[in-house]
Structures are given as C-alpha cells and as structure tokens.
Image (tube, rainbow, N blue to C red; front, side):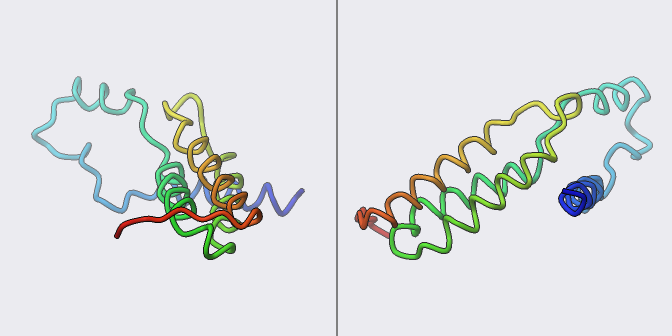
Length: 117
C-alpha cells in the first residue's frame, strides 16, 4: 500500500511537468486571461492515454491477451491520479477500463471480431 501511494505521488508529479512549454507566461496574455486559463479545468493526460490503450486493447485484445491486461492495470492505477478540483472529466478512465475489460473477456472466451484495417 505504501508503494502504491508512492507510485501515485510520482505519477502526479510527472503530470505537473509542462512538456509543451508554458503558454501562460507569454507577455501578450493579460493577467485577467491568465487567471481565467489557470481556473479552467483541464484534462488528465493519463486518462487520454488510458482511453487510447483501451481502444487498442479492444481492437487487438481478442488475439493478444496481454494488451488488455496491461491496459486495464494502467487505467486502474492511473485513475487514482484524477483530481476533481483541477480536472473535469473522469470518463476517459472509465471508457479505457470498459474497453480493456471487453477485450480481455473476448480473449478469455475465445471470441473474435473482424476488423478491416
């Protein structure tokens, strides 16, 4: 449990790193607009990654069972990084978990869908 809390703290610290550059520090942006941009809820980047992994798990999970398992673990672990005050949408986590579960259940039951790529 202690290791899990350390992992969540580490993921939250990584989430705060601005890899795209800080657009709020631009001199042409007024203080009023900067305050507004800081107040607007944002999207959790792990939720978006989990949603994409869930889609991959749904598409390729019936053939390769390890993909939905990894995606499910990722979505569940990173769900605990969701902050209700700063972020506005937990649904990418929910959808990633559901798509991973569907891919895993299709792998276990031996079902297959035919995707046209």
